[in-house]
Image (cartoon, rainbow, N blue to C red; front, side, top):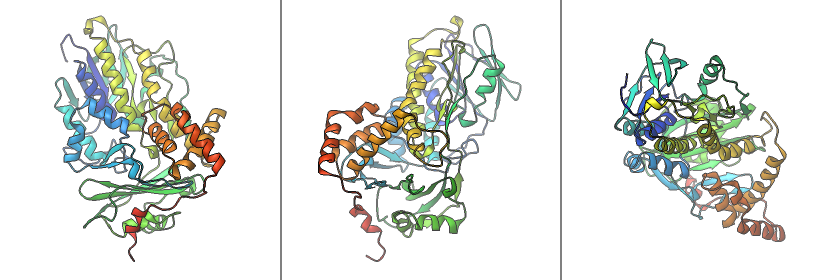
Amino acid sequence: MITSDKRVVVIIGASLAGLFAAAAAAAAGAHAVIIERDVLPDGPFPRKGVPQSRQPHALLHRGLLAAEELLPGLREDVLRNGGVPFDTGTVAWLGEYGWLPTWIPAYETISATRPLLEHLVRNRVRALDGVTFHEAVRVTELERGDRNWHVICEDGSRVQADLVIDASGRGSRLPNWLSELGVPLAEPLTVDAHLGYACRTYRCNGRPPVDTAINIAATPQSGRGALALPVEHRQWLIVAVGYLDHRPSREEAEFDEFLATLPDSAVWELIQHLEPVSDIAIHRQTGNRRNRYGRSRAWPAGLLAVGDAYCAFNPVYGQGITVAACQALLIRDALKQNRMSAAHGPMQTRRLQRRIGAVADLPWSVATSEDLRHPSSSGSQTLPQKLLNLWSTQLGRLAAHGDRAAYLALARVYHLMAAPSMLFNPAVIFSVCRGAVRGIPEVSPRPRALNALDLTA
């Protein structure tokens, strides 16, 4: 047991959300105890508790900034270990209205595999003062004491905590624990477009023909798409994406056929220059699910949920890690403002949980509005979502034909650098009006950079 006048923060789960929360607690001068059911790997290797770890992950630009603020030097650490930096404005991206321009600078991101990113973050968190890891321990129950929480584990151990943070992901048992404590809960919000994806790792033995990502979006019309992402050690993650009946298989021949028959063959052409070095990993637990924690006045003091334990997004939009990092910054700031000893009892966390929820508002709107456009999706669009989609569709058409104002507005919102109101600023409205007068071509051409993929050239 930790004996100190500092707050004790117990974090359930050593996911990236849990690691960021531990960094936040340490930065505020608290003791952070991470309880993880897995034995954590010594290196950048996939683990059982992260079933999607072999799939690609992304740090949006806002997430890169937040992670660097929590763990200064992380960006350079990822680069030193082979992370691939590129400007998202250079990505070859095929959407409903053709290829987006590749000559408008946007935001920096760094491409790396999830195991490498998690390994580097975990090592940095381990080195922080006041952080303790308990591995191969499963939390089975939460008990409320007079002044703190008792976190009860499967091995019979108990840890006292002034603040408990659930970062255990989609499989969180917090709803069960809250029910046992008599806390009323509303049903979670869900939108499931029934997306599935399959990923294979490839190696490039020479110089790759392209040096940035390629994204063939799975539109409501096609239902299928693919992503090619350069990562560390001259490797590429090649992902096939499909909705409902179009979900890709782990069978090699079917995976290859899937890529070869997409609306554009760019990803298929790329893998002709590469060598596969792994089997095919599939993942299908991709529905959007958002708990409504913190709304009831009965929300317990000293309890928070972050990351996928609070709100899980369709992973195709790459928002989860960024949201978790931004939520951790709120926790850090709240703990700094409440530098009280354990004798003063648990923090009042209802308002903080609502603020943590607000971080997910924009990405939730982006993910669910887009997913609800797919015929395979559960649920239906509200009138505001329909209007926003109509406006975003018009901006997408403009962006595909090089309209800088429309392109940058969409990029800022997507990277969580601005609120959706950015889509209605005067420059964007002017572009839409000009496009209505002049007309917009139906399809934009393929980027010249992809000519290097042609094996016959």
